[in-house]
Image (tube, rainbow, N blue to C red; front, side, top):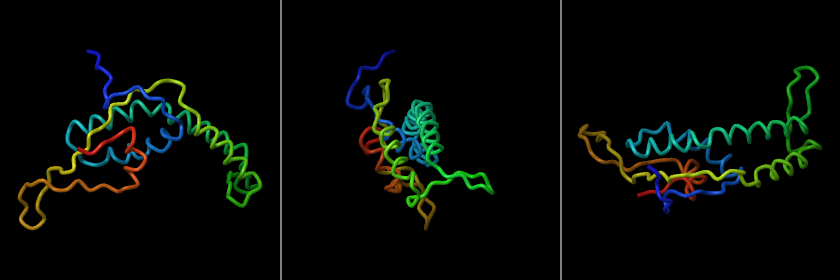
Length: 149
């Protein structure tokens, strides 16, 4: 069955930056106990974005390797804002992250409930409680990946 594209399901040209910021937060959101539909929705988006995220991360590491200093003793690579190559690294990383992903990615927004099933701390009765989630998780997800219902 083919779903019609709607407000909630759209083919979207995502930038590498949007993928880069959203993927770790979706993984974090997947650790939260949610109702079945939102849980499945989060899992689907994670599966869709995993490959692009991995490719972007590989490119990021290549750029880092180009500009990082190697410690002669430990052979570890590092790059700090005070290093000469830092501005070149940031410039190339920005170029990478500002690129639009070359394939359309079909995303169905996850509908997050304002309230979820919970238990009263005092009397242990089942009841709806406010769904509390850290803002740092929602900020990169709010435009294209999730909505609160």
